[in-house]
Image (cartoon, rainbow, N blue to C red; front, top):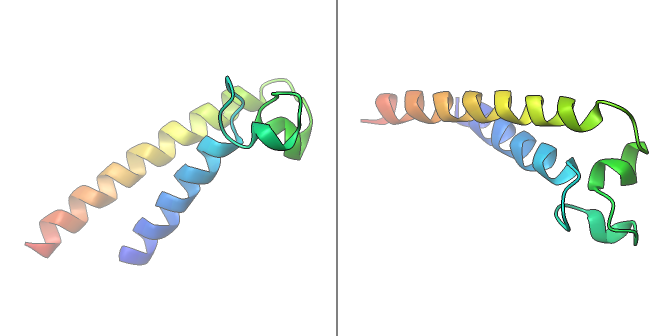
Length: 74
């Protein structure tokens, strides 16, 4: 259960860093101020929306796992 929490937490961090934003994420690697997703995948339509949706789902799973672990631990 704790291993799942760690994996989901890392996945949340990775999806956040891959999103394009105003100077956020891995945008420094491209030199153009573009987002981290552009660095890895090039500009694809809908990629930011998909990453945003995935980040939201992973965040909900992370919170749910945190709640379950807290209940089991006490």
